[in-house]
Length: 459
Image (tube, rainbow, N blue to C red):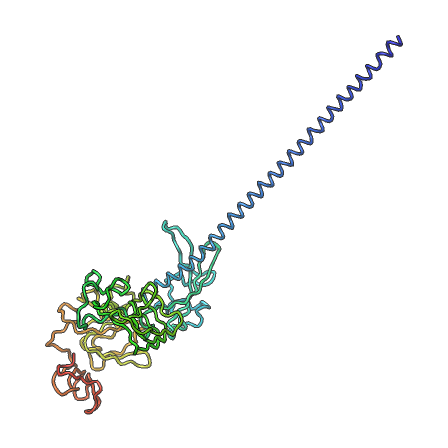
């Protein structure tokens, strides 16, 4: 029995040890399962942090992109403000007077309020002009301030324009000055002899098609050469131009001295031709200003008489002529005074503004002078129209014109003398030997203001 028992005991012990081993395996498996859970949680936390970071970066990027877009759009809105102000100046050249006197930028200026323009707003509660897209939705705002303190001496206007989109604002300061023929000592449109006085008419190839046909510019296919079919002209060696010069045409120069800046409408180099009128060779001109000559585009010519007369029409206040000037007819005398007034004698004037292109009707506003006073010997004294037109026209020959007078029916207080010695012919206001007449000479020996032709001075 003891042998049996002793033989069985080791087997039992092995089994017991095996049981312990199994229990140990189960314990280690349980420990492994807990570690995996921790790992999963950690990985999930990291991924959540990454997602949160991506969302934050994306949102901040979108906000930054929006801010950048508003920042750039605000600059565009400021430029739009400058363009809008320039359009107002184009429609009314006296608009430089208007602004908001409360602006510190306009402190040294003489400003006339314009409450109808929202772009003149100042301060946090001030108004802004709105910018709209093609679909009508708001795209931004702008406002501007005007400094016209040096306009009277330099013709320049300083404009501070601020654009606003969202919370972004951008500000620009621009110097504005209208360039025209008056900026030059010498200005020409065409470097040709006037066809009306040329000894030979220009060839048909010198003209553009149109009604009426217009002479071409030299840089725009106008023919030239030894035959000179278009009557070209050139600056000679005896010419010295001591100041700025501009021609819309091609400049020809032979030995000329240009002391000022020279600009031209010729769009490609060379910006002048070292040629005579017939295209021949000649001495090289001298340009004393660095960068001269240069291209500067085509500048507009002065307004014609018909365009100036248009400025006295009262039927265009909503479009082309917001502030009509004053129209006077026939012999007219202006006497300007230091207090800003002017005395006007104009006996043929019946209407000082016209109401249509045909001048068949008109009006006589008090700011241009009462008709009864204009036709009197004393004349009408009015305040000089600020930056506006006072236009004098010939006595109309068309019977339908509101200012028409029959040739045999001169107005009262007016005489036109077609006889007498030189200097005595002309027209006069009032009666008697002391009535002022024109042409006028101050003594029997004076040659001042004397009509030298044998025909009557144009009454």
